[in-house]
Length: 232
Image (cartoon, rainbow, N blue to C red; front, top):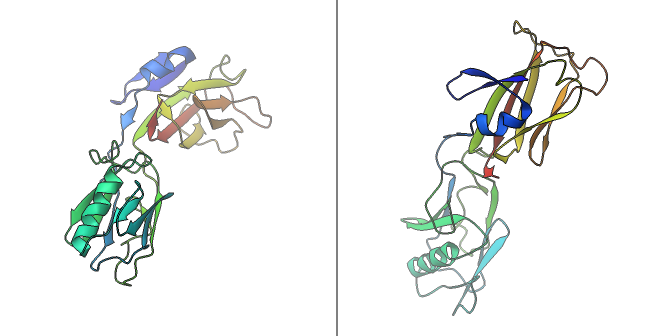
């Protein structure tokens, strides 16, 4: 048996098979949607490119594919055409829009869809626009220079003679990409000498006590903070 904490902080007892239904997946409202702006004040030259992550769009006289962009006769027409092509792509969930100085992109729920809170990943941004003033305002599409997480689950589990005897897994409702784990005594004293460990597995978080050293004893409390951005 173990202890879990709901979003409101209420402690409850449960077996490992009940974790997935009882532990709440809390949306993390961290900052605003990641966004970046590509400054385009001059008509791009033929074969100039704009790259977002692994996808590259090329300005041409007359587009013949989804990654070719008809540049038109002015910076404004080139921007409008580029916005349309990015919003129609199927590889990236990005929302592009016209702004006074060029084009803004944000992470979105779907390609060309509603902008989303948080940054599920970090996409490198590059361009080969001829005018040296026409550049991205940052090197990556994200909110603060690092990946933010959209979902989180927090829990504490009191060790028992049953759950310290073998490896056990706490199922999560999202793919865990960041994990924090610590062990304290029943009165809250940190126990840095404990060798119990938690690690990310495909279905959630796996906790191991049987790894030698001083893994822990019944009554120890394990705190787990799991973060991710993709629901299972």
